[in-house]
Image (cartoon, rainbow, N blue to C red; front, side, top):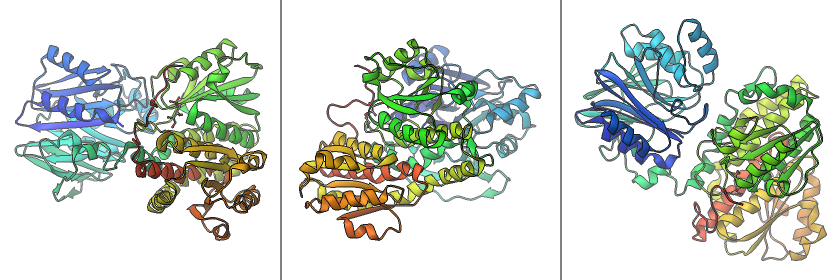
Length: 607
Ligand code: AGP
C-alpha cells in the first residue's frame, strides 16, 4: 500500500522526506512526491522511483522545515506524474497525501464541481483536498473535521495548509497512521519505518481521529472535535520486522492481510439493497457483458486457477457457457472465438508475457478483452478494453495468495452481476451479497487457527509427495493448494478432481503420500467422503478441510481443519486459506526461502 510521511520541526525537511520514502519503498509503489511549506506551498512529484524525484527536488531547490511525502500504489488513475500525490485544491491552499480508497469520491466530486471547484486528476484523493478547502474559514482542524465527516471509505492522510506554517494534520479511517514524537520535532507516517531512525516514541491514531501536529505539540481529536489524550508507546521492532509488518515473511503477512484485501476488492462495489454489484471500470461495456454468449478466461498459474473458479461461478450464476485457457496455450493455437465471446484476462502483475500475448491474439480475433489486474497502469490493464482492479495492494511474496482471493472475489461479483441481468432474482442476489460481506470475518476466524495448521505441517514436512483432491468449485482450489506447496516447499504435489483419483492416481496411495481433501458441506460432500474412504482403505493418510460443525468427518481423517460455513459458491475464498498456511509452514520448517523460492520470479515477463 502507499507510504505516507509528514514532518515539522527544526531540521530541513527535504532529506527527512526523501529518506523516509526510501525506507518505505519495500511496500511497492509506482510514483512518489513531496510538498514543502516555506511561505508558499511547493510540490514536486513524478511517476517512477524516489531517486527520479530526488533530482527534480534538487533542481527545484525545495527548502523548508515542514512537509509531507508519499509513495503511491495506484488504485484509481494510472501511475502518472499528474496522478502522483501530493494533491491540492484548485487554489493551491491545501496539499495532502492519502492511503486508502474514497468510496464516494465521484458523488463528492460532482457536488464540488457544482460549487466551482476544478479537478485536474483521475484520483479519488484530489476530492478530499477540495472538500477541506470548501470548509476552510480560518480553522484548519475544523475544516478537516467537517470534510472528513462527508467522506466514505478508507483513508490515512497527512495534510498541509499554506495558512498554517509549521503544522501537519494527520487523519485515520481504516489505513494506519502513527505519530513519531521527537525533541522539537514531530513526525506522522503510515508506517513507523519512515521515522524509526529519529525516534521510537510513538502514538497511534484510531479510526475517526485526527492529530494536529506542530514541532512542540500534538493534539488528538475526534471528527466531532472531542479532545483525546494518548500515552506514548515505545517501538521495539527492528526495521526488517517492520517492513514485514512484524511477520516473518511477506507471504505470511499477505496471507493474513486477506480479510482486509478481500474487503477492499468489494469496497464501493456492492449494491446491497439491489442484491448486485457495480464496477466503475466496466460501466461502459455493460451492454457487451449482458449480450455475451460465451466467456473465456485467460491466465497463468494461480490466475489460471482463479479463472477455473470463475468458470464454475459464471455457469452457475449467469448460465453463460464459460471456459478457461492457459494463456500460453491459447496464444499459439488458432482459437475458434465465435461472435458474442468475451474474454477476461486475469493477472496479478498485469505483466505476464503469455497473458499479454494471449490478449493480443484474442483482440486480433475481434473479441472484446477485459482485464482483472492488481496493478493499475500495468501493460495488461492498458491493453484491455476495460476491466476491474483487485485493490489488493502490492503482492511481494512470489507465491500468490491475497491476489488469488481478490481475483475470486472479483470473479464472483462479475458472475453475480451477469447473473442478475439474466436469471438471478433480487432476493438470491441480496443473499449472496450478504454472504460475500461476511467473508472477511470468516477468513479472520480461519487465520486464528493458524497455530494448529503449523502443528500439522510439522507432522508432514518430510513427505515427498502430496495429492490434493476437490470437486466442483473446490477442484481449482485443490490445484492451487498443490501449486502453493510445490513452489515454496519444493515438495511434489498434484491437484486432481477427487473423482479422477480412481482413474490412475489411486495407484500412488500409501502412507508416504498424504492426501489433502477439500470436503466442505456442499452438494458433492458425500461423494468426497467416499473418495476419502477409498484412500484410507489403502492405508493413505488424509488431511481434510471441512465445514465447522461437521463432527462426522473427523472419523474419516487423520487431520481436520475447519472453515466457517458459507454459500457453496463462496467456499473457495475460505478453503484456500488453510492450504496457503499449510504450504507456508511446511516451507518454513524445511528452511526454504519462502518469499523468493528458487527458480521463480514474481512476474514472468518472458515466454
Ligand atoms: C503463483 O503463486 C505464481 N507466482 C505464478 O503461478 C503466478 O500466478 C503466474 O505467474 C501468473 O502471474 P500473474 O497473475 O501476475 O499474471
